[in-house]
Image (cartoon, rainbow, N blue to C red; front, side):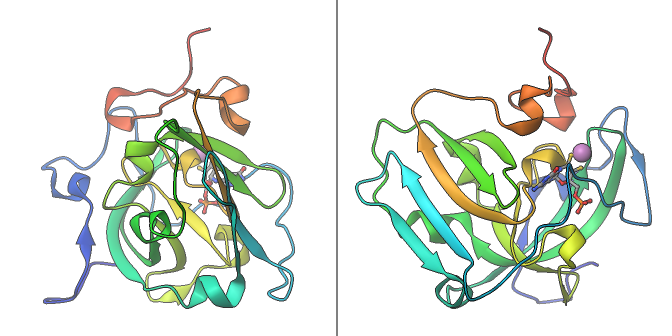
Length: 203
Ligand SMILES: Nc1nc2c(c(=O)[nH]1)N[C@H]1C(S)=C(S)[C@@H](COP(=O)(O)O)O[C@H]1N2
Ligand SMILES: [Mo]
């Protein structure tokens, strides 16, 4: 859904392109569900979000604490490496920049490993985690995310292929050297820019 006139929304820059569909992608109207394994069960009493690795002190947030962080809205498109794209996603959640305020990250840290329930992981350079259009979303298009699409919390990284947008996100591990996450271990690209078609690693 598109933002309303005057609505306070962060506009992801790729939505302003004349051609919003990256090379080799086609548009879909119905949103596919795609993940390895099964939808993890969520219990708000036991759920937590952990910030660890190269940080001065580890931070653990309960669900209530995470839900009480200030929220933003982000307007973006999404691009799955298997070839489908969708336009006009309006996400609501906590900006990654808000999360950055919660921990003292060591200057040694250059990358982040995003962790999710069900042992999913995906890696990102820090600059891309802290881009202004990156958020941990609870809601999309004015509704809570469904469990299949990542409720209670999914990362959204609009400028990279959608596998970087971990569903059921529950942790950030700050690291010095880049390390492959789940799909990256199966040969997906370490970076994943859809405009450069960084789909698979050539190795
Ligand atoms: N936890 C988790 N997140 C994940 C995945 C996964 O397997 N597990 N797959 C990724 C891939 S490849 C895509 S295309 C999107 C799909 O999200 P959707 O099911 O909401 O369309 O989730 C990404 N996030
Ligand atoms: Mo994907």
